[in-house]
Length: 305
Image (cartoon, rainbow, N blue to C red; front, side, top):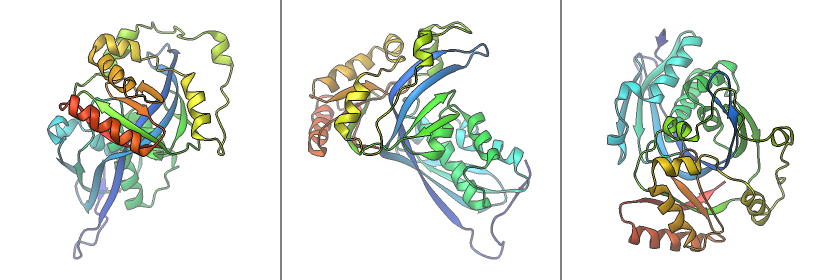
């Protein structure tokens, strides 16, 4: 990859900042497994108010330093999706201005909330700023797609319906929903969950009529009650296989449902689960009770939207 510094060598290097918000799958339907081995999905995706932070300081070389409470969970820096996304973009953008990334890691890893994907997406947004690239640029979108299935939706970081292998995005207007996220601090590998689902190449997981029939989601004026009624009819098809891989996910869901939440479900391939409440106060009270009872769990009270 050919790189160049985005700053004059005689002046201070510019520092750009981005927030990498957690992605939450409110629904996740596995349509089937394609002949190439990838899975076609349909998912209503929201974003939470908990996040990692990423900065880019302009420089001649591409590098990454990790910090923050979850940094020890990030693994080898060379394998980080931030660097993968940057290298993929650099392969298609000549003389891409890069520099030094610093990741402030707060979200749990391998958790079903797109932590690594959100970090990679934040890196692409930072590089877009540094290089005057539009976020809709096909080169950036292709780099996002090649980095990972959740990266395109995290680049946008807005509520949408995600279909295909993550490349097709239909924007949605969601109301702000008070919520609690819980992760039992047990990593779950996505490949293990899909293996437990057990679809063969070319096999559908839903009926033909379900594939043909398009769901009409609530419009921009819909209330939280309207959305919850619609979401309650949905599912996460990976929930049952994920519980087989890590039974503690069932314990998390049981604990959330015992709080009186209006909707509880697993996000992504787990192990993070979410619960939606009527008010912020209800969400905070539930989070406090869960943290007291399960002090080793990661618990966040906030909002989805």
